[in-house]
Image: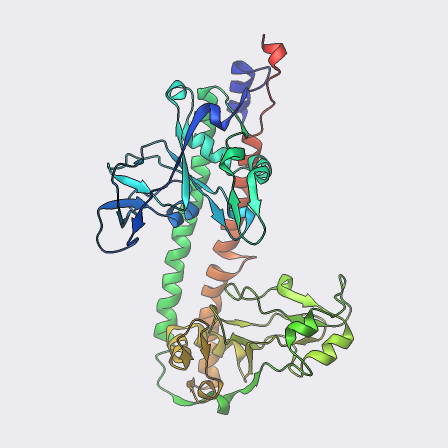
Length: 422
């Protein structure tokens, strides 16, 4: 940071010039006349939407095939910035990624993206990786909303987007900032690679530990199985009219959203006592196995958190209580357990597993001592790869917050007073 401050004091002591995007870049659209996207063959290659959405820098090795009617279209070049044009949420509009590596000829851009190409006059004044970092800063994202339109689906108004102002500090300052932010990205990538390696170890031990030579019984014989139950009306009609409490005193209802990462305290809906008594007979105490039985997250299994207040079960879930919930939680999250659930899951637009079939699934029943031995081993791996308060996920989250803090700090510039510069 001290080096940046010294450079700014030396190169732009009175502030940094801001210019509109249209002054610096030419805007271009994605490919047109498209058919057979993501096919095995085609007459062109293209960079797709998810390559931009997931990567701060385009992975030029992840090119997809498509067929276009006319090959005389804009092809990508090193230095281009690609941005998402539309999404279901305003926050996901204009997510950007930069083509930092050389890219082969005849590589197009997805028709759901738009791009920016540096004008020749600025080729020696702008580092487009710096601009790409600026586009992801909180400062710019707050400006961006002026150019986003929509109600149920959102899109970027190109006309308003190119009017937005961006800072143009001296090239030396830009490159120093890029170097710092690149290092943050490298550190995060190293942690994520280590986390992936630990996840593979975890899966290896799950597979090894659950090759158990023991008796197998139906779930119905080893657990009390409680399916979702809502009294006197649908969940939605009741939930839309309950008296939600900002500071709950006595009742909690699990929501049916975002099963992908399990539940934590922030994923509860807090309701009043009347609604709690009215909604469900399936009372929770904490620690039960909860399995989502419908939708995109079907089969997702987690342990209910323990809160110091009464809780009830959400619709579209199944709750299990066993003599060792932790052991069977790990079983259902293993490949063997997931395959068992898949065997009774109907494949459709809205996947759902058969509850009767689920009750008859066979699960291992080793001795309690063996169950505890397996739980103790997997607890250590689970904390390392999944615990958001400890282990690698916590460290990655800390690094991410540090990165966002320094990125926003580094990309905040005092604007040059034009009168002072003359």
